[in-house]
Length: 248
Length: 248
Image (cartoon, rainbow over all chains, first blue to last red; front, side):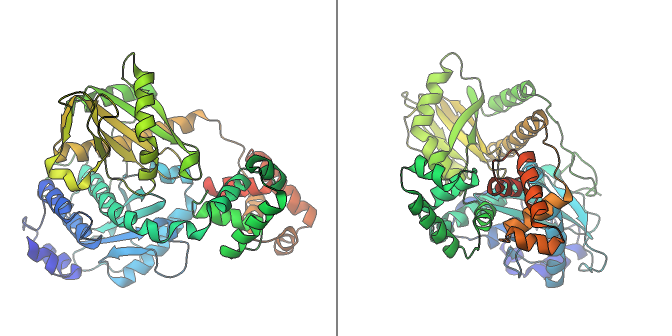
């Protein structure tokens, strides 16, 4: 079983396709859980996701930060073994879907497998279907998309896909928990966050001064300091920044 | 044409994300929860949701559905006094299930194959042992589905299946709430454009220049957007518009 993981993703994908009747590359749920349980937090995200991809019979996996797609660059990729040219294009497809959906729709998409075709100009690896599956889940403030490619003609179990997404969330939970301490709230102080929260609720400086029992000038100082730390020019932008980053 | 290990409920990989059983009212969730409770050999269930936004101290857990019997208010209170702070912090960083032992003699909770994937809470705060499945949807609707019993011996299969089902229950609950709240008048394209630019740090004069409007018109659009979003000023309107997915 270990051999499957030693082989790099690209090969393991095409290899399985050439031998479609090879079942021992696919993990049972029990084996899967034993693996996750043994590894605990030590394994990081990559190894568990490889195993999960095998568990659902997929050929390639890609874990992306769905909430970071708007930003430039490839920071949205957490881990994966999709061919690079596909990653770039699917990033555009995902960003598009993200901007067209409302927050409620995103909330309701939790663990719901969604199928879409790769853009026409993409060439998936030989024997791999154009149709990819996206699964969404949130861990803390971060929203993730798990994208899977499958060998052609493979029939998928929706239940299994949901389980895989949940287990991916478990694996990500370990990592998130460790990271949280390091980049906590962009180093804004509790008071600054408190001010931001009330501004987002539509309160004026005078009102916040009453609520928090400190002077109006102090409030304005906090807000100026927030704008400096977040590199924003106006109150509106600072609030937009705070909401986008789930600080309030 | 079958998956090597599964007999899938839904045929081809191309089928979209149709949900299996869609509950239409809260009373439909009850039998589903009872069925889950039976399978876990538990005696009670409860669904708690996180309400409020901002730092953990501003949020709290509210019981939405339960079958705790006549003592429900007391049990909920004891449960929340003991665990709500931990649970709210937990759901900000992790999706791993939580377990606890009860205070009555002989109460225990076991899940040998799953131990590393569970978080153990301080024992003895409530009479019964239990397991809480955190469900994180996104900006709203987050919470916990909880099962309790004198003793709980949990197989890993059960944990995963129930966690997946818990996620579905919470999305059902959210979509029911959504259908009940009347939707505010939709924002116009111009209003959205003005909100977006304001959120990007532009002042009214700049927005006016960019959109070829007068400053007064821009302010009027921002004002009408604030009214439609039930906000007191443009800053609150921007915060709400981002949360609702009108702007980014």
